[in-house]
Amino acid sequence: MRTVVALASGTVIGLAAMAGVASGGVPAASPAVVPFAAEAPDTPATPTGTATPPACVSPAPVKTYAYYHCYGPNEIRAAHGLPALTAASTEGAGQTIVLVDSYGSPTAEADLATFASSFGGPVPSIEQWFPQGEPGLPTDTVNGNGSSQSGPAAAAGWAGEAALDVEWAYALAPAAHIVLLATPPAETQGVPGLPNLMNAIDTAIDRFPAGTVFSMSFGTDESAFASPQAAKVAFARFDTTFAKGVAKGDTFFASSGDSGSIGVTRAHRQTATSPDPQVSYPNVSPYVTSVGGTQLQYGWTWDPTSDTPFLADGSLNPDYFAWDDGGSTEPVDNEGWAGLVTGGGLSTVYPRPSYQDTVAGVVGTHRGVPDLAWNSSVNGGVLVYTSFFPGVSRVGWHVYGGTSASSPQAAALTALANQQRLAASKAPLGNLNPVIYAAGFPRGTAFSDVVPATYGTTPSGHLDTNRVWDIGADGALTPDPVPGYPTTSGYDLTTGWGVPAGPAYVSALVAAP
Image (tube, rainbow, N blue to C red):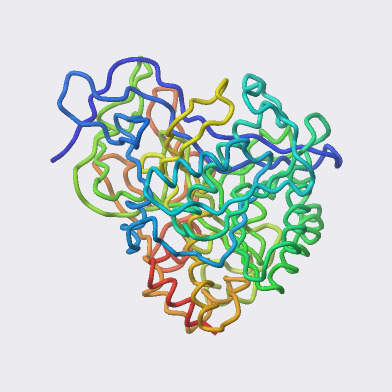
């Protein structure tokens, strides 16, 4: 049945990017660091005047969305061939997963407990660790009205990122020990989020056991530095931390970003768009596995007949958000209505690492990202429970997307492989990239390839690149001037090798040398 979403009229606030940038005590010229999470804006809860059910219904306290499809852990697990979550689930036992975020969240432990009990999982093992000291923010509210790149104005955005990270790492590895590694950037001094975050990771490598899996859902564009040489010098310094962790057997994941191939320049406080395609750090580091984004359409299929997402009164256009019941597809994530597009492309700083020699025909002489992909869509996003800062953030269930959702889930699935490798008396994986690019790795079964797909009858429904679609003056979607990269069979610069195929991916990693 084709479902056309009939929505109540009214103003719809555009996609609320859960952004905030860290700050601290190094020179103000340091590029800003932004988390890659996006929250679906609130919309009418149900279509009025019709019998059409809402697309998303959360657990209690019930929150519904008229057209944003959403998933709990069991839908995501089923889509990837994993068993249902139960109180007796042991996936991830004996493993440590570290999620790295500025500020953290004052309610991280309580929110994860609510998430776990709502979906019937085991009692979580979680700690929030501030190796550089707690940020000293209030627990009840923050100043959510400011535009500062750091401090209280950014804390709520980072708290949302933290909740997404810990809850969805738990969803795939519910018995793992989950660490929310949080940094307290100063509120007014410079913009050095990346050095603070990297220092915290360096400390965590010393504290946690070999085989710890890290997930980083933030980044700074290569073009935000003064020059490629300046970026190269900074990245080389930061990479010593990743090299140290890899030598110990740790694995690092990072989100590829949510702006397609668009990057910012250092000019105008890094708000000017680079005319050339860009990628970001740390996902571009050769020591890090970059996770791109897809749009998992599980039990529904997008069926647009219009390229105008919003009507003149600001309400959602039912012809753009229409869907059919049924189906299970997973194209590249390119949601023009939200400006949410998976990052990916070629580095201007790093040459091609030797493990990418197998894809030299795609990446040429440069490091290419991402390496693999996972669901990152907002329409088809994941449910996240939050109760932090009630003065600026609604307490309850929210729908989140962005490659911030992709990285912690891919990291958690990989932790299951380390769990089984430990049981088989094998060393932990360390740097995952040489493993998955190796000529003998069974990528045909370990990954589900992401290929071009067409939905509905509109140009933006043809999902085959990570080129951003802009909303023009007439309200219609048009391609951005900055070109993107194609989604193809096999390895590509939008989804890497594809989506890890659940147990087959884990088994392939367990069997690797």
